[in-house]
Length: 281
Length: 293
Image 1 (cartoon, rainbow over the protein chains, first blue to last red):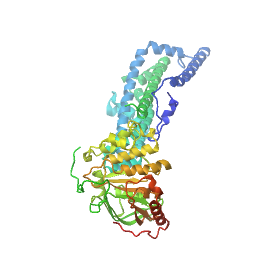
Image 2: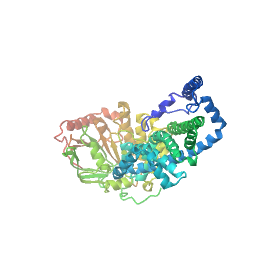
Image 3: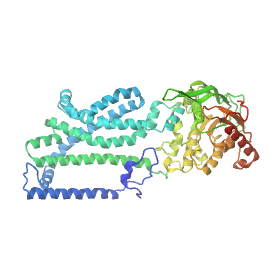
């Protein structure tokens, strides 16, 4: 049923001709998953051989098999700490995305607001957010709040810029049509601007979802008493237990892959629904 | 679907499909309407010279002229989408803004301009959903889709349709709110020649469908640069000069309705076409004296 390679779906334009799609098929996905897995396996084997032959100290580079062994033997710990990191990451992503989308909706409607807000947004964006963590700890305490605030602050910018572009990327004739029946600003937003912005929002989510994870981990370095994989890495590297450090990084990688895949799948399901020819009613 | 007070519902119920009603409130009245643009260098550019014009209720008026003569600008001023630099526009005695509010305008553009994420049916329904307090007549969307020839394609999305079918959907969307005034901006310009020729007679047919007899007979302003298209469907052809746009000829087309494609081979059609072409060729002299009804 698939006539187009799945990777091409990412480049479909929101307003121009959509290619009618069949239901997602997993077979071509294997072609994308298997080669990198093999490459990863080869790299792991190479490191394993190097560490064993060169007798590299475990304080410098642990053996991949040791890392894997530790990852599975202590899986419960990494999983639970991973959940905390995931919570911070998703909390920050949700707050950052919602706030940025609301702000973008305002900016898309008002040039004054754009001129007032965008320079500040860019200033915050070019400032290394990490520098604000000590401040956030003072303001928000030692709980989840400062971590979520950092993750939110680090994610809002791509969403803001993309959402503004999306809300403005409407067919001017379509806008004229809405005006010709005296549609309200809300109706124009709800039925024209918001659907037009959906592909832009997904594009920004792909960027933001990994940024939120970075924000969460960095914040956890500072607040290592609160747990989370960032705290695990921080504590274990102080103890020179590199197998544990790598195992925590491995869990972070899995979370990152899961989050990114979730966004791609959500987008694909969404555009599949949009594109699906509903010939039978 | 409440029926609210309609300020211009004074016209008598329709007996014939499209009698022009000289005594009714005119569909469109322009008084010294002009449009001036300011260029980046600060110079003033006259896009439309002061224009006065009356389009009667039930009249199908075509606006022809060379590219860039201000036809579309004039149409946009009638639709209330571009504010004129001077003069006044009234639609059935109301301001264009009021006409928009009461959904008295049916707009069709050169490109279909449909919402890509909505099905044909939901696109046609769009005008009924927006500004819902002004949705008066319970339009039968299914029937309208059948009339425009899109039966069976209700659940299709615009990208799955041909250009002609998309434009039919756009026409159905414009008609769904049952507007007493249709404003068409080169609606068939993007279509192939064969579809174009078919669509002009389709438009003549669709012009009169699903119209509330309590409203004044439906009028239309049809912008085109095809002389044949204008003469084939209009009651009256207005010829515009190159920029600054000015109406330089007002040519009545008296061929009775309903018109058929064969009509395009008649002497009358050829003669009318020649008059319009002559007016277009000599932009300074009006082929027929200006006489706005």
